Length: 416
Image (cartoon, rainbow, N blue to C red):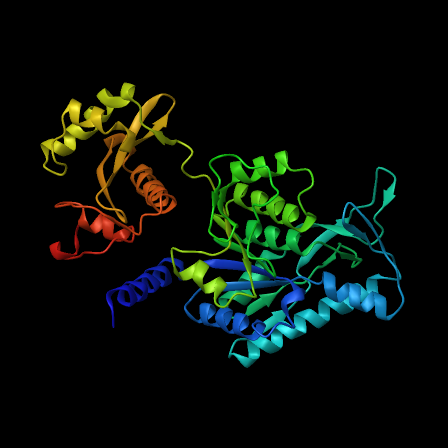
């Protein structure tokens, strides 16, 4: 077995340990159900569940609703891409929700998992807005998280369709994207997946800021919520489906979800690649937990030296002079709050594909607030964006801490 395969296996173990006990919410478009790779997607989801990750599924139903309405000769109108659900159309909306949910249950059972469908979404009518009557189209109020949490604890995979209920039992057709985002918020999920036919957000034709990261396939690789909002602000004609994904991704991240992934079910293993490796193929929208981190400037040098002094005295860092830092200031990043530096770290290129993480120092008053973890996480992300394949560091005293962040111990022969 070669070195790269061994590293890939180790990486999977790291992610399994990291996400064990976490909750993932996966919204699956019904357009992918008839594709030959759909059973493989469901198998991957069940295997993910078996590793200890809690899973909730939200079925998308738009295509199935359209098919049912067409078959029975029932017409519905749309306003701003929202279906105006009539009394006549509602039974066929509910039928579509049942059909897609049953398909998911069947696939879960075929792979050794128990799915359960329930009416756990509280909703209310959209009513009449600017002269438009939305009839039986509703909006999510909240999720019965008490019931769903009990099912998760009993190893069920809850399936929550796009049907909401008010306090007197009146039903509404609601957005599956909204349902998925609200589940994440109410149950404090770690990740949200929007799984459809398209592999993320296509960059072509969009007005984008210069710092947007685009992969070789023309897909936007990752977006902070600030960048995602900028895309919405700059592109009025963005396709509705992608606009809706971004709106609910931003909402979910603002309310505690760390990562939202837009991935394709039509690419083999796309979901497990997003979960169990550092290389994803779709678009990731993430909470901007690094908002206090910026590139260092020459005016920061005195404070950087002060931050490092304590660690140099204890021989946790190698000595660096003012000139050393000034000459490589473009490699340094700092953590600043209200004009005060609380941490610093640097990336030093060692070869075309390898970079060293160095000069990591955090003020004593900030060491219990996660500043160091955020600094390291930010620079790992930065190294990935700069296309470095490997990142390493040298330490004599902080090995356990760096191991807890996903690093591993290697021999000197493995270093550049």
